[in-house]
Amino acid sequence: MTKNKSSLVVGKTVLTMNEERQIINDAAIKVTNGRIAEIGKREEILKKNSDLVIHGGDNFLLIPGLINAHQHLTGDRLIRSCIPDSITDNEAIFDWAIPIHEAHTSEDDEISATLVLAESARNGITFTVEAGTVAHPGSVLKGFENIGVGGTLGSWGWDVGDGPYSGKTVDDVLIRQLDVLELTKEHPSVKGWVTLVGHDLMSDDLLKKASELAIENSTNLTFHLSPNLSDVESYLERTGVRPVLHLKDLGVLGEHLLIAHAVHLDDQELETLINTKTAIASCPWAYLRLGQGVTKLGRHPEFFSRGGSLSLGCDAGNAGDNVDILSSAKLFAGLIQESEIEGMSSASISALELATIEGAKAIGLSNEIGSIEIGKRADIVFIDLEDQAWKPQSPDPVKQLIWSAGTSGIHSVMALGEMIVVEGTCLKIDEEEKFSDLQERQQRLLGEAGLEPRPHWPTV
Image 1 (tube, helix red, strand yellow):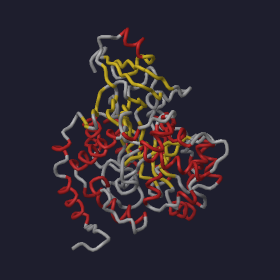
Image 2 (tube, helix red, strand yellow):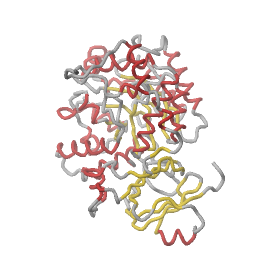
Image 3 (cartoon, helix red, strand yellow):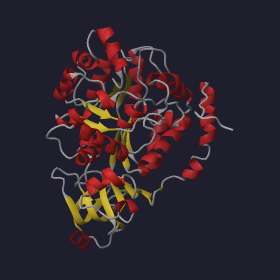
Image 4 (cartoon, one colour):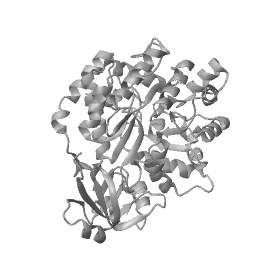
């Protein structure tokens, strides 16, 4: 980035999401070299910086770039909403999603990642934690670069079973992880994470060594666990204890670990995750789409209310389907309301916190993202208050954003100080050209995987 490249962002209102949760009216933000340099009243900052390019205007609500803490960037997206919702979640994963991943080429991975991240950016998401089902990490990294957003990158990591890219040995898996860490070593906006598939598809030896690798390299570890009861049953049969308690016995829990899902937790597991400061990525739409019992047995609102480290995710193109973290936040706010937990903050406030600063804390990056504060990345979402969803305007913009407006009105997005979306259009790619053959790719992937989705009703 050019030295001392600066611009100004102005808005009617800024939701800073800083420690005091300040809301600044008639605000301006100075951005220098991709970072926030000043925040304050517009008149004062404009007076000192009258020569700079200005983004935004009087009709904008400005919020921090949103965080998606669990998203599959490859596989599902090219067959989005093709997997039947009348089958079990295990069938959806192992009979449909994994064969599609196996059929993906390097070019498919880039196209898929770019497609997901373009949709993410248009919906205000500027940082995405990749969920670790990537066959070609370099191609997915290009997807991040194509759109201009930040995130984390992982690669397939499992050594139990014979699925695609499963390692024959622990070392095979760790070499793939090290390759990703090396690939992203000097990258300005994408960080390599040690990323395993999880469930009961990882040996104890792999788990321990993967955790050690993450800590040694000052990065994080993530994997899937207990979205349904099958992981619980499997661990009980194999180890005699529930999954989280087995991880505790192995010594792999801690602030460096983000567990995707953890829907099915008992009291002891919940307490253990809180005490070890282990984070959870909650993907509420995925649990409803797959019928995984979140409304009956899920405990994420309780986990968060007791100080647990929680974030929100959108999951996959056939598990939640849309890449819309504000939609996930709204659904989670509903789960909070339904839980009737005493002493918990307003549901809409908690939901926005989870999509921003609390999500950033859960993934260990609250010093970089999640709020509009001096020194942090200039990741900013511009919401047009002239949009019909914002008329009339509520005195409380947080309630209106979560319960009503959602992504309606997202006009522009800045990531690392660069405008990457303007008037709903991604600036860094020609989407029509880039995505011109999506239908053909879908048909090829389904054909190679031997899958034939059909509408439920007769077609004449």
